[in-house]
Length: 175
Image 1: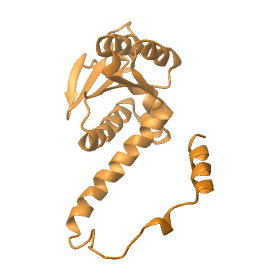
Image 2 (image 1 turned 90 degrees about the vertical axis):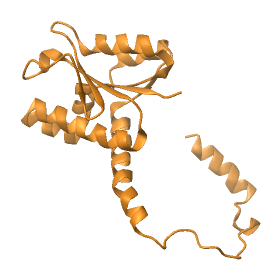
Image 3 (image 1 turned 180 degrees about the vertical axis):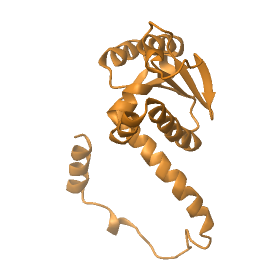
Image 4 (image 1 turned 30 degrees about the vertical axis):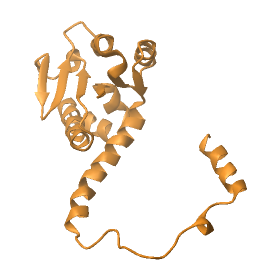
């Protein structure tokens, strides 16, 4: 079962220090910067992505629905909030949806319907990791001769942690 990532666009832009700096120059540049980063993320993760923006904040009269390099972009109608559009999508998708926002009202609504939620800052970190992976992915295949080399050297129990260390590790992972 594939997941559908639904993003509160302006919330993510305004939670990100780099994207919000771009948005202060121009709202349209901020949207395009977010969409470009999402394209890089989609190349690595391949999940369907929908970004919802408030239509009232648009510089020009955008189409209500459009595609941007494989990313579905939705603008709310005049007088309607993006939150309502996101809630409508989550109602349709239910457990399949992963909602990216820092808005408490939307996260509570999505959780009630069984959708997963992720904070905007945490998702930005995921986007950065995916972009880094995409850049290094091409370098990895270009370096031939690197990789696993067969050996007869044994790596048995002498490398295993003691029982006390293993228990301690389990406890610290829970923090």
